[in-house]
Image 1 (cartoon, helix red, strand yellow):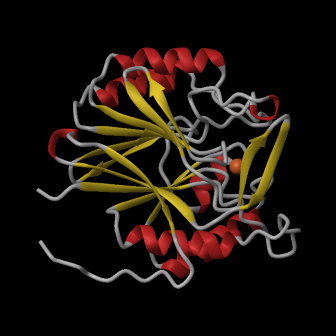
Image 2: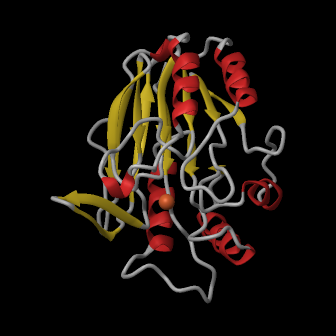
Length: 262
Ligand SMILES: [Fe+2]
């Protein structure tokens, strides 16, 4: 049985046609390159939020739609703190639950559960009791499962990014649900604009880099640079065995040659 491969792109922060672009970044070019690259390798591609640059305007989502349509790839979506969750559901025809962009997708060797951790007007994220109960029931199905949301379930540290995560109650609730299910391969997120991995509730949590701009710490400074066409690839064998996470970077003129076929 071939490995199941899932790709995660995050935080493209696409602007509307007349909006100011983040300094020197190329989110449209990077998102497009990452989608093409990922779709050639993965059976599903999810963008974990902050599709829109700032406030989830119609113009921003028209920009998002234009990039996705130009790629001709069926991309899964997730809501971030710069998004309007209900607008994503209506504009892109994604069926959520109770007004939130919560849904699950079957994969060839497992499942992807997407959760809406965005809360209007807040940079941090939250999951309510209804969402956690739904996650619990989804995980009870027993398939190897990746749980995706915008906000990391762990603290990044550093003053500048201290609030860039789920709130404490949500982390506690999520940990309680996840720790009861050995079939959770990973909890994946965006929002941090950097690549991170850490242990969480008996599994591993990953944060995906942003294709728009990247954060880092240098001494007491929170620093940034324009993003790269980067994304995460997750893969596993039958029953969830041999789960791997790999950060991918699309190089200029990216060309791969077949060495052998199996
Ligand atoms: Fe973001």
